[in-house]
Image (cartoon, rainbow, N blue to C red; front, side, top):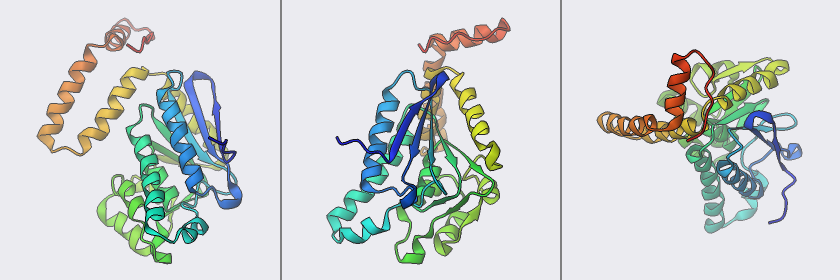
Length: 261
């Protein structure tokens, strides 16, 4: 596959991998080309034992404006529309179902599929001046796939207001309704995101993988089934060497030496 220069992957110490959408002239749009590249990168990182945490961010003035409207206008037939939206859904599922925690580092605007991408990440930290919106209703194209991700992080009435009005919301309100975890001055955003990534990377990679999978799976279950499932997960987790090591380290008041087994 031809290299996509719009998507930049870098590796930091401590098991932190960074994905940057670098297409600022197109407001980091989730074009078909960019979506496919992101899917492939997430698949690769989810299989990479050295990667413990993934950070995704945009470049230029903002995070991502969502789908490329010029591309959408050019498609003109049902199979092409379906292929695009299915690919975008596949990207979001790769993030949710992947083994690694994903942090969205957001500045500027995260609109439509860009807002969907933020909601799909496990954690999201933004600048104070970031704004979020599902504005499809304004152009006659309801944000139906973005609402899948947003409605799983935000209550129904607040999600519906975003969807029905298309109005942008502030970082402070996005935190209040649970779309993001926190927001900081732009000058502190990088440090705060890295601080969070390093803290997560210091944990057992195996334990994080087990927990992330269980978290999303149990959300879709009735209460009694969720408890039955997570009891089984915790039992299997307790049998792992990292659980033995972690408990011993805590009782012995020392740092754990993870084996990821």
